[in-house]
Amino acid sequence: MAKVFIERFSLERMRTTVLALLLCAQTGYGFSVAGQQENTCEANGSIYYVGEWYFLDSDHCTQCKCTAEGSACARTECTSLPAACIHVSHYPTDCCPRCEKIGCEYRGVVYELGQNFQPSECEQCTCDSDGIARCLVADCAPPPCVNPVYQPGKCCPECNEGPNCYVDASRSQVIPAGEPVWVNSCTKCRCHDGQDAGYWEGYRLATRSRLKNWTPEQPST
Image (tube, rainbow, N blue to C red; front, side):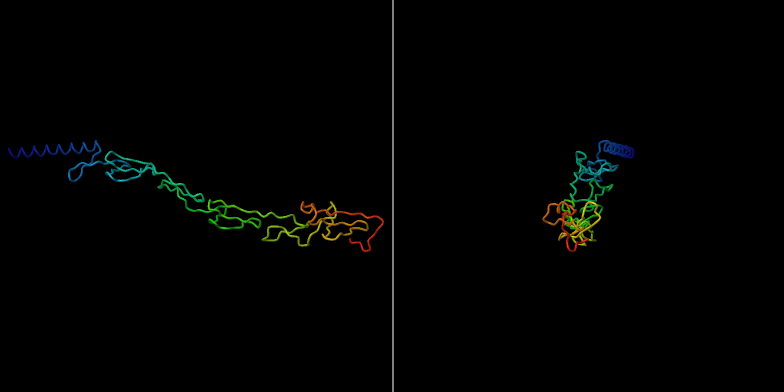
């Protein structure tokens, strides 16, 4: 009789344990080793206990915490990238983009913040803190000659033969600037100089003076 009673008691206890486990599975409660129930959260195909943090596999920007009332989630707010960021990376496991390099990119070349550089003979640039390259461009005055030459490493053209101009619109004859030059027995020409408005306007034709009844002793050709 005692044996039958013990078997019935064990069977009833097993039924109670099974029902308790089924109830935990349906209500989201876990069953601890000590026999006490504790809350759990299910996400990402896993079980998390109260107090645990986790990110959603479906959205790496959403972080959750398992609480007694369930999962409490919040979306991560990404901080603004530096204004001078020129290389941004997006990693699959990251929520927010990363700035890999800051500086200035000018005509395909990257410069460090604060760096001074000269992309051409006529430009002087600085890479500012906002990632923008700001440049000063040389303003060359009109060269005082008709045949200027650009020297390597220099911005503005130079007159290797000195100031000069054309005798007339045919541009077939060049005379030096300075003193008037006789181009034939009765015509003398003079190039504009710095005092003439035409000089600064790039006017490269000489002024002509034609004399009558007088011939210079040594006309210049």
